[in-house]
Image (cartoon, rainbow, N blue to C red; front, top):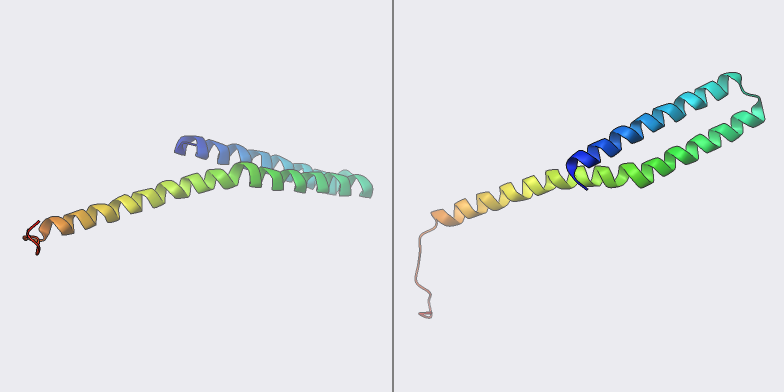
Length: 94
């Protein structure tokens, strides 16, 4: 998954979660008790599924890119440090 694709997944999931939150509020205001309970359970299950299936891998991808950048920066610092060290002969003459 690319970084752009991960951002898109997060944005779409946020829109779905906002829509389900609106549906839950509307059900709380206007629906009878049994319908309210059913709608709330459906909304919670759907939001949990969206978070688990879409958002979690996208966030992991976005975090991985940041970790990869930090890793590359550390490797670059190590190489610069090694370049500053003087060259020496191998102790066994190899």
